[in-house]
Each structure stands twice: as C-alpha cells, then as structure tokens.
Amino acid sequence: MAQNLKETILNPILKGNPITVLVLGICSALAVTVQLKGALVMALSVIVVTGVSSLICSLLRNTIPNRVRIIVQLVVVAMMVILVDQILKAGEGTYAIDKQLSVYIGLIITNCIVMGRIEAFALGNKPIPSLLDGLANGVGYGLILVIVAFFRELLGSGTLFGLQVLPSGYIPNNLVILPPFALILLGCIIWVHRAIDKDLQEN
Amino acid sequence: MNTNSNVYTVIYTAVIVVIVAALLAFVSSKLGPAQDANAKAETLRQMMAAARVKPTEDLYAAKNAEVLQLYADNIQEAYTIGLDGQKNGELSVSKDKIDLVSKLKPQHKAILAEGEVTLPVYVFKGNISVIPIYGAGLWGPVWGYIAIQPDCHTIAGAFFDHESETPGLGAKIKDEPWFREKFIGKTVEWGDTPAFRLEKNAEAGGATNAVDAITGATMTSKGLNEALNVWFKAYEKHFGTGALLHMLEEHAVETTPNAEEE
Image (cartoon, rainbow over all chains, first blue to last red; front, top):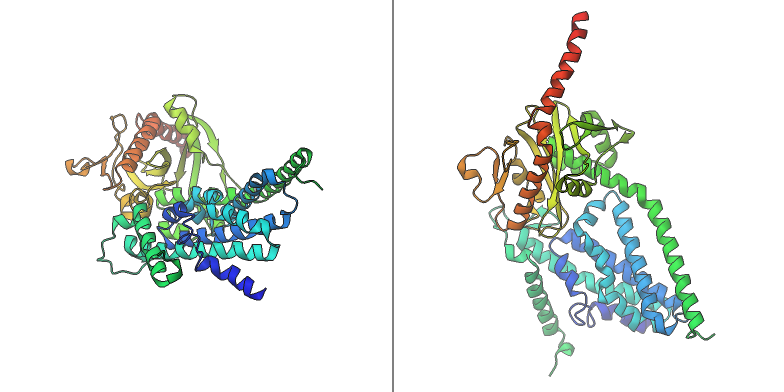
C-alpha cells in the first residue's frame, strides 16, 4: 500500500506528467506563463482545485448516478474554481494577481486534467489516494508551468518575479512573450523528458 | 439502492446543485465587501497615480486603508456632469463614504448613444481634475485616468490599465512608466477633431496634443486613441467651452462680497 501511494504521488509528476506525457492542459500553459508570479499562483490554484475536487468526487463515488456522473463532476469542479477565484479576489495581496490572470482562473474548469483525473482515478479509488492523485497531478502541471514561465520571463522581459536579472542592455525578445514560443518551449521540454526517460520512447 | 433509477438521478442532481448554489451564495456574500474594497482601492490608486499624488509604485505598495486615507487627504471635491457640461450630481468624498463612478462601461455606452450620462470629475488639491476614459483594446477593455491642470488644457498626468492586452506589447500601456509619462505636459485641444492623437509618428509634427503609438501594439493604441477621443468629446463642454472656468468665476464672485464685508 505504501508503495502504491508513493507511485500515486510520483507518477503524475514524472512518468505520467499531465502536460509532457498526457499532453493535457496545454492552453493554459501557453496563456499564463509570461510571468513567474502569475504561473505560480495559477499552479497553486490548479493544485487546490484538482486535489479537493478529486477528494469530493471520491467521497461521493458510490452515490453518483452513472448516467449523470460527468455533470456531477462538472458541478463540483466549477464550485471549486469559483471558490478559488472568489478568495483570490478578496485577498488584499492576491487581488492584483487575480486581475492579471483574469479569465484563466475561471477557465481552470475547462482544464482536462481536473475532469480527467476524477473520471480516471477518483471515481474508482478511496478518498485519501484520490486526494493525493489530484494534488500530485496539480504539482506535475504546475512544475511544467513554472519551468516554462521561468524561461519566458527571463528571455522575454529580462526579469524573474518582476526583478531585473539580465543586464539592462538586454533587449527583450518579443517572440518569447507570444504564445507560440510557449509551444516551442513545451516541445523542447517534452523532448528532454523523453530523452532522459527511455520508457517513454516508442520503438 | 438503485442509483440508476430516474427518480434517484433527478433528486440527486437537484440536491447537489442546491447545496453548491447555497455554498457559493454564502461565500460570495461573505467575501463581497472585501472584493469591493479591493476594487475601490485599485480605482483610487489609479486616479491618484494619474494626479501624481504619489509615485505609482508607492501607491501600489500601500495597503487599502492607507490608500483611502491618502485619497481623503488629497481630494477637494467630486461631482458628475452630463453631456451638456453642467453638473448633475455630487459624489461624496468623506473618508467613511467614498463615492465613485467606477463602472465605466455603462457610461461609455451612454456616451456613444448620446443618452443620459453621469460622468465623474474628481478635483484633487491644486484644482487638478481627474477624469476617466474607457474603450476597447485588442483583447478586452482598456481604461485610464487623465489628470488635467487648472487651465483646463494641459495634461498633468495619466494612468492606463487593461483587462487582457498582450503582455510585453499592448500591456505596455500599464507596465511601462515611460508611456504614461509622455502624456505629462501635453494638451487636450477641446473642440478639435480629434482632440488628442495617439498615432504612429504623431509627435514628429510637433503638435502638443499628440503622443506616439506603441510599436507592436497597433490595435491597443488604436483602441486607446479612440477611448481618449470619445471621452474627451463627452467632457468637451465642461472643460473646453469654459463651463468649468465659468463655474470657478461664479465661485469667485460669490466669495468676493464676503471678503469686502470682512
């Protein structure tokens, strides 16, 4: 059982990473990775939403009517997303970040990772493993988000967390700031990931 | 229990939806005041940044309560005007009850439809009037605040914001201080069409009512240019044809006899 739990936590971060292996949640990875700060808040929001939604759905799993299970999942996920958005808007320190992320917090609802993990894992497993699976998938997603944002903010603005890092003579690269570069960068990350992990390579 | 029967399914979904709705309504009503306070402090920060009460970074570093206090200390009066340039309402500026016209979208619609408007004018110390502008950028709304000197002609400062312009391109209207600083000392030519120009190479002609558009952000610049001109047109009768100056003179006439009595 302990081995299983470890697998549940590590798999989504490494071998079964939702972005680089399952290629889910790409749209938001392109949209919110211009700055590290935004990416970090987005990552934390997704971790909370996937974790708690999986937990709730797992608790309800034996009562949910099979025919409307997707709708019930959607209601739970939507509720979590609205809660996160409301809380970010209410905090004095997080208000500016929420404004910057604008619609993308709300769009966590459409992030395939959340519904995907509930459907694939939470409906068939006990609450604690489901919670861990949700959290770990959120972490796997957030990790890639932060890596992408690191390079995009560094090369696109010459800053990290808003602080100037590169010398002031550096001319920011506008391509890096636009979404297509995030896609190129994601491709590179998938390449590196596959090169390191031989199990992921097809013959 | 048969969880697949029709009755069970209908009751189950109904119960889930009611529980979730009740929870969200409760949270929304609990957090509403904090959210409104954040939004209000944000508007005040932007107005005071335009009026240059304090440097923008200081305003953004300040807590909400400090921002309210700073506003109360620096505001003289606030009122609303109609398209005829005449006052049609007062806005409270006391610290406990700060009134703002913060929903600019309906006002923007009313200006375009030439309907009933309540356009705010916030008068800061030194008779600097701050007015809002609002329009459409590339991806979403853009808005801002323009501070006008007591001569009703020269721009004392400006601040712009946006909902979702491209970071590094259109978002420069907010992120780059040099952009808003370019507006300082420029003029608004009330009555001219356009009253202000935010266009490519606009500064080259030497006009005082022009600022160069941002490279790589053509649509955002165009949207902001339109926003500026639509709102300047709406305020034209107040600032341009002397309604405000007239009001100030009336004020002076009212106070002169008193001075003689003393």
